Amino acid sequence: MAVAEGNTFNFFNAEPSKQPCNCYIVSNLSEPILETEQTSSLTEKYVLGEQLGWGQFGVIRVCTEKSTGELFACKSIAKDRLVTSDDTRSVKLEIEIMTKLSGHPNVVHLKAVYEDEDYIHLVMELCVGGELFHLLEKHGRFCESEAKVLFRDLMQVVLHCHEIGVVHRDLKPENILLATNSSSSQIKLADFGLATYLFASLMVQSGQNLKGTVGSPFYIAPEVLSGGYNQSADIWSAGVILYILLSGMPPFWGKTKSQIFHAVRAADLRFPSNPWDRVAKSARELVKGMLCVDPVQRLTGQQVLGAVIMVMCFC
Image (cartoon, rainbow, N blue to C red; front, side, top):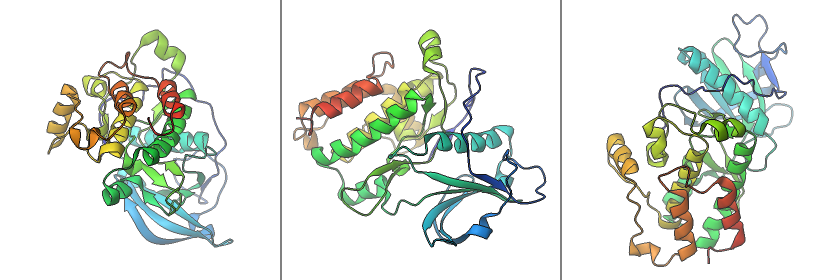
């Protein structure tokens, strides 16, 4: 479960670049959230089907485009759950960031957004392979060659996010989807509900800038818990994912959220002989570099991706 507390909207008073979005509102909508003059309704173009999942603000369902029969996923956000201005701004930011990132091969594509009196509906690419989390549950762990391909694609999209000033802040296997049911399926990064903007030039000048506890317990970086962080927190989360891909277990464990946070702060990184004796030393060194407690000394996204690309199987 993701957590989000404190100041989660630090934009340095900079105006993010606007990207065109296929956004629509129903006619005569009172107090719309979306800033658009285009009118239409979800039900004019789509038929909602079975539920795929749910979250803090709403549900995700399969939806069918009436004109083509093509299947999509529809995330319906209940407006009555947007109780604060930050909640509303978070939804608008999620739409803006997804629009900005749509087109990248490893990001879930946002097709259109519709608003009616009760919901904001995000119509997105349907990833029929489900969550990487469920694949991990099924297989336990991945061999190094399989982990390498998945992790390379993840780091390519994480690095792309950072290069355009976006930090995801909730990287975890539940938010990594498989486009198809194939064993060689492309991965798609999803759920940008906690994502925000960071600007590299400002980070160089002022160091860690974001505040507030944001992320999911097993994957959260220690500096997030300490109260100041930047895009390097995504690298930590990705390092936890790599550790899990190769071992089937999280590096920092606890039965409760507070116990997990304590383990993350302690950051006692260990590599038990089973299975790590069978994992290449270069893979262990990469994990160590990503799970470095000091974010200044932690590997950058470019360094991580370079290390992954250099060797096919971490050998």
